[in-house]
Length: 97
Picture 1: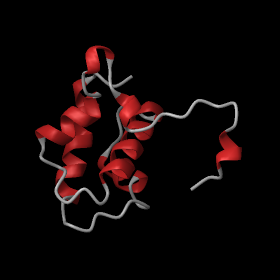
Picture 2: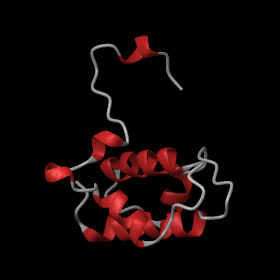
Picture 3: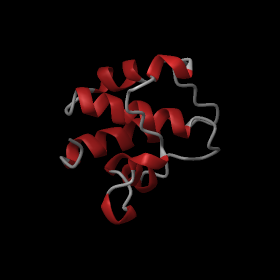
Picture 4: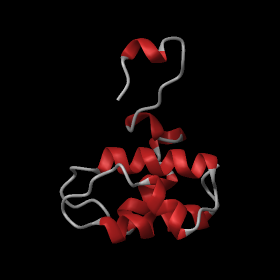
């Protein structure tokens, strides 16, 4: 969590801002849908945004890197295995920058 003042004059992308041209879902979002990774919705925003940040900095993460990046995101419903698979699918798709 950050105070708004700490991002003054910086670009901030929200979950809604991930949409591609023609309102197409971001590859991470597509992978989450494909893997049915969203169950209760408690963690989805954080998991998706964390996955995007991970793949922006490391387009080909191994399983440990994926798990390490998600260590602060709490999944309460047990979708964690599907979330991990979704991130791997998005990484392997080559569609994420």
